[in-house]
Image (cartoon, rainbow, N blue to C red; front, top):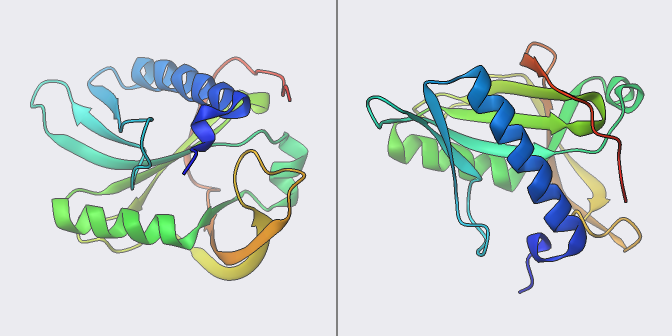
Length: 171
């Protein structure tokens, strides 16, 4: 199976994620963002590790979304992510006894949102709704047919906001 990360758009998304990591680690210097391998499909995106104790502080699900402030307001500041990804995050958090963090990066706004989504027992901590909706299958499928799947809409209104330099959207 070909991974999105291997396409030109996937490579741009990876570059945006690396920029986000630099900002995040500057904001939280005691934490290290340890990515999962990008050459294979991973259940989660990263771990946040305490630099002193070397202990995992959070399991991370991270997404980069090329959306404007107006689009973000239109979606009522909710993050759409597949329910299966969130359930996998819950399962991993439960098995590692570590909480789960959601990180949403929106380069056009110069905004990173961080919110603990899951406790160390795997329970959701934030308001959300699950709906079967038609969405694009991958970051590369803007013009391809949509897929019907269960998506979780997570309330990010009270997420921690980290600002950085806005990066205009490029196709």
